Image (cartoon, rainbow, N blue to C red; front, side, top):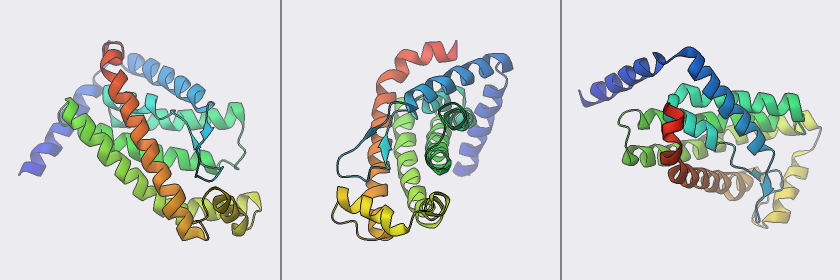
Length: 213
């Protein structure tokens, strides 16, 4: 019964959010998407991680959108952000990097937004971001092992060993695909989710009046 009550709250809150002016929502989603795209341009390498794993804060606007406009809005912002990146800047990964960014970012913001919508307070926001980070990291393990890295090697015409060597240079513990996931991809996603969560925790309250206006 408790689970049914939670799902009922999510449904009611989602319905309430959908009643907001469509134009208003579209404008906010568009603005957040453009901001996310711009932020995505400023990516940096992280020591001890393979060079193809770049850190940026472009998941901040989608997460803000998920909290203010609903979890689906966050997913849409993630999608538009990556489409803009491919169309305007171009892709250096045959769009594989953008695909991975979208999948993991969408899981992160949708999870966080869905938990926050149950009860809009700081506790549920923190729980949502924590669970979102965990699920994003788990999804990163599966998608990178079975889809992203194998597809990337084929799309770029690179042998898997070349990718592994990039990881070994950054971290000697990385010697094959499994250790790449264990010592590279997974801790990177955990750190990224944590950083995004901290930033949003600091700025959301200040931006909330604007996002809800």
